[in-house]
Image (tube, rainbow, N blue to C red; front, side):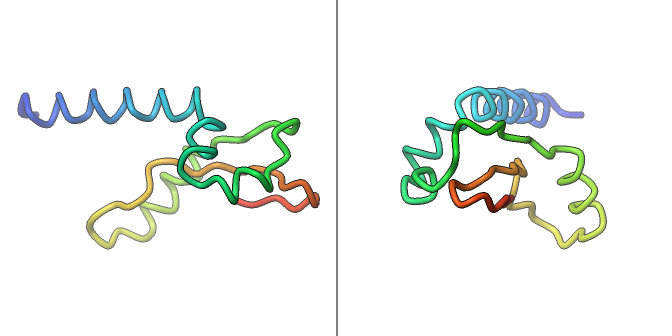
Length: 80
């Protein structure tokens, strides 16, 4: 693996760590209308293994998603 790919992987992992630990803040900043509908008293579930399975089955080239997150809305519905 080249140094460039290693550095990119390390940066990607760092970004995912920050996103995971500050998910609620990111949602309010980037998707405020959705964040307002989420019941933040309920646990947020990160489905990284499920995302990997989906990506392996649907290999179409460039990846667009790095995280799959299940949340519960205030009306009781769960969404990913």
